Image 1 (cartoon, rainbow, N blue to C red):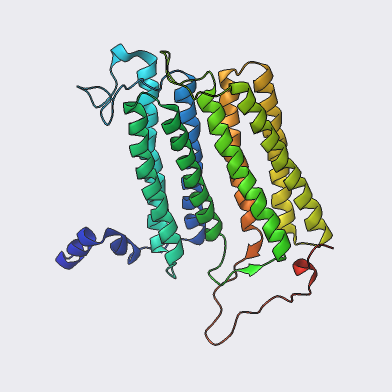
Image 2 (cartoon, rainbow, N blue to C red):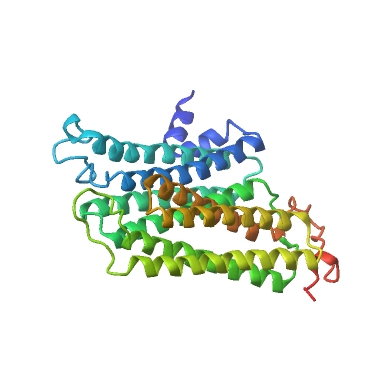
Length: 334
């Protein structure tokens, strides 16, 4: 390596790597998928911290204790669980970093992928700081809810990046009409509300995250749970209606398949929700329900992203062909 190369590597390591490596498109897709998988893993392990009463296993932040960066044997299993979850944040950062490097090195260069990778990085950093605040304020339920909601933002960005790695870089072409798109946006909004109310159920419920007395949201837990169930049925109904509308307008198989997948995930998640409610919230089922909420969110976003296609960039001078507005895939439901 020459001195000039060494200077470039220090000043702009991403450009240095990109100039010497061109990843296969499958490598970029796998890197984006790894970041998405880790964004779900960190949610599930965070739930395990709370459900095992290990939320204050490390009682301070950024150190684990006032005198130690890591947990000590005297802290017991709760210290290991909490500190282990903190260490997984570094694994998540590594996965996101790998996605950024792969996207930056791809040829031709795609600015949107790199920006989505960096967006994940900054969300991770923000949520790490918020996680520290959660500890410092003694697991205040409102900060815990915000911590989870910011994780759903991370999952959304990671899902979008993964989808974009599987598409071309041309202008998006809609596969369905505006009325169908509007119905899907209503479905997305209802899902966001469903997840947000789910955090309220958690904040008012019995699993406080620590064995000691921890503040809970001053709401009737059972009433909030019933509201959550009503919202879940609304999301299921919207998904069922969307599937019929897509069949009626003879939509392409992509949106139909993604909608069917969402419907199946919702049924499984709903069944799990009712089982945990009537069995007095066993920790293992609550953890599985948190994992299911991540799958519901990803499946909902995939329905939204399936409503358009992105071909490869058109050669210069050749305008992108617009789909016929009277074609079956663009028709409005009658």
